[in-house]
Length: 315
Figure 1 (spheres, rainbow, N blue to C red):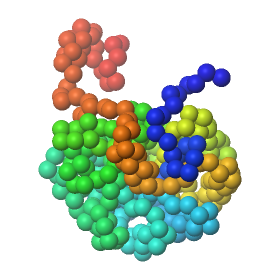
Figure 2 (figure 1 turned 120 degrees about the vertical axis):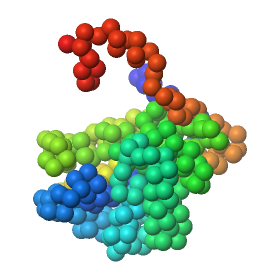
Figure 3 (figure 1 turned 45 degrees about the horizontal axis):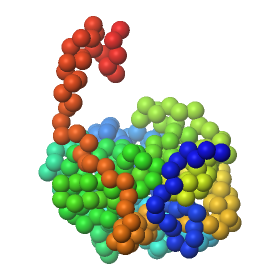
Figure 4 (figure 1 turned 180 degrees about the horizontal axis):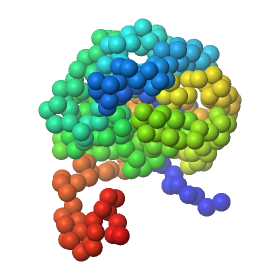
């Protein structure tokens, strides 16, 4: 069979064929309050759905302990402050707690100063929980701004996991240096496969757990074939429910039985890759931000449209 993905130049510890980071985004009800404001506190159907995180997180932590693996948990700072007991279970399990906004706000929806201020407040909350500041970031809604990566670099972050420019790790070339990107992709999230949340306008037809796991598994097999990397995005209130968590555990057990898949945190993968970079290896480089402003040619092209309507197609 022809190679569909290039073989990476880097290698994984212990002769592992590929690296697999299981990440959990623990949003609880933060984004409901942010998006729905004064109405959110009485939207009990969605509040209760999202607050299932309080039940799911301890079950996930226990399942990870039984499997003998560690995961990365991206937790908004407000959730760390509001749901302290739940977050303490993550830390007690030896997992990484990483930055995911303060209240699940998209950085590209904020002013530059506001973005940095809330990033620092969220990092303070995580430091108060874990005893150290976070080293990893996933921008809420994958909504990084033109400033996000510069801020992460200046604040001492080791990696970001918000972009989808590649399937393997790459370097973002910034104004003041480089930042490691551990890419993620939206269909590697459980929301498109399971979530049905009318208050968010998210009306997906949920799949059976085995069907959803098959999507993730196919990507993992491709990463295994090429010797590359994969991270998957799970939400406790979505995939921590019994049938879905059982299917997830069964799948991870199958992967572990193969013996040559490195299942670890994004932080550990970032540390390993930084060591390889220091030893002279290199990764693909991508300039960031991608653009410094609106694309000039759009004005000329749009001027010739008969009708300019979202998403920008002529009628």
